[in-house]
Length: 233
Image (tube, rainbow, N blue to C red; front, side, top):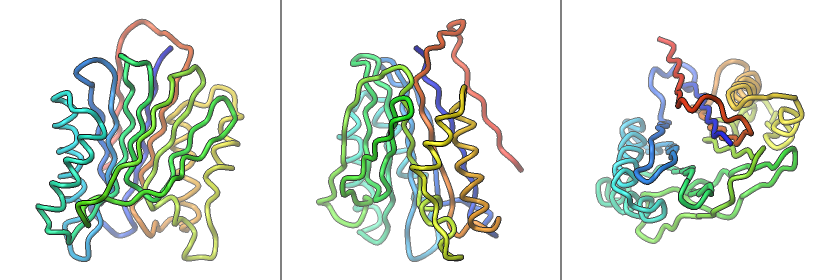
């Protein structure tokens, strides 16, 4: 099997800086982790918040700290650093090769969408952002890595797409249609969902948009690990 991860993101309209941060790292005992955060505050500096959260989580994961403990420590750190005056959503996808599982950690009201083949499952248990109080807990689940499995996490921009114009985005149905297309890559899925949200906002996103798509394919390839990044400037 082969793990494929794609990220697509765009800034809020007329904003030069995104409050969303996404990073991918290799885990010390094998596998990969994708960390996504969406900074939220009444003032400026939302990028600083999401960057601080992502870097803190990555630092802990790199030291071998488990995902749940890393999320909890980061929550305490953000609360202490900003005295409860700022918050951030936090999502972690971790491909753990020791257990052959995908560990999903979520502090985000938006659900995580998973699929096996074309069958969709919504992981939408109640979950709150970190940073507002010390009692915040992460929602964590672990699912086996299986061929043709897909997992999707995203920030508020996709959920709110079209809301200013009386429309809404049905991510579940959109993903279902994309999965029915033969050979749909994670990047194709991520780009297609982002494009749909962008059009619903009439090309003027009301919020920063970020989406991460992880898929398990049967492809084994040549054993070379690759990562492609595109940054418009």
